[in-house]
Image 1 (cartoon, helix red, strand yellow):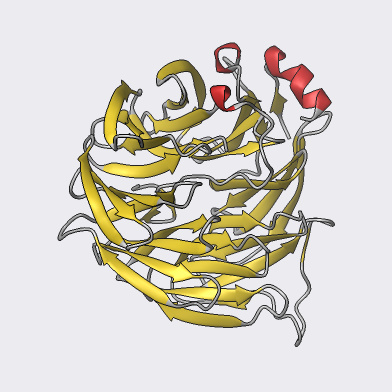
Image 2: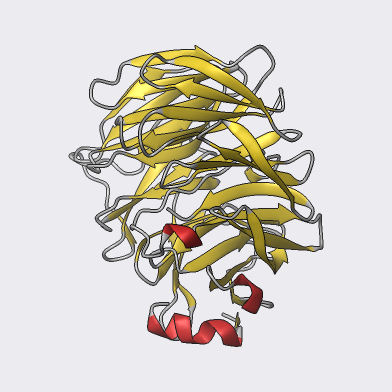
Length: 393
């Protein structure tokens, strides 16, 4: 594997280290952090990945959420589609689908990361998703070769394994105990369980079948706080498959039409699901798997949702209406509709519940909402077309 280093990142690595992405399915992304971050809230960053077009290197733009300012831009690989934070948020890793590699650099020093370090993946990998629940290790959904790449960031960063999974892996989620990683295989309607302690696909048995049959076209995964349940969002069958992680048994619950994304609400123990064709959001109570659905308006085509850490409100990015719906969680009613940029596709909230950040694909900018007033307090341009938005938590 060919590895290129940026001098500014070497010390960090040595110490510790949508219409693109999900096959033919656009997946707006707001990345939850499995391990708690060690950075103060003053350094909370929202990171926007922008695709500049075929054959052209893309960018990440870092926004200081507290100050609503652009604090740096990094040139990454071609066709960037997804990113994650590793090692307590200190390292940002970007999947570059067009150049079959990963870019990685120091999260809180983006201005020193040009060019970033990179790891070359297997030819034809077409990485579409990255995740980590183990220190110094990144897992890569390689949609082009039906594998999950295991990248070790210690010492000389390199791919150490390509684990065979199902057809067209597009999304992953890791348990917080660092024991399992689950992979959504859109092409064959399965989820594969990986043992992250040994970096092996969990052997299938009568007691623990693997891969796990779910609904049609799974495109997103979230895991409950106690790691007992994994929720697979099935876009093709308009339901969510709830996987019992002890037995790999599945219970299917119906949601709205064409669900594409989910957010796990730790405070309320809910799973929020955006139903793009249904113009609605479904709320799954993790305790009893009961479901309620909230309409966001005809033609609004919600793409992403986030809930505040204090449990009071949820915010929905409506790509068809150029708005954000604010949902009062206790009453399950929309309390306000906020105009933002054109085609909002991804939304995240800060860990202190004071800010919500929205990536607007059509207008190539980011809207920052102050939750005290539920109004846009800043609009910041980003280069090229935003593909996803993540925030340190």
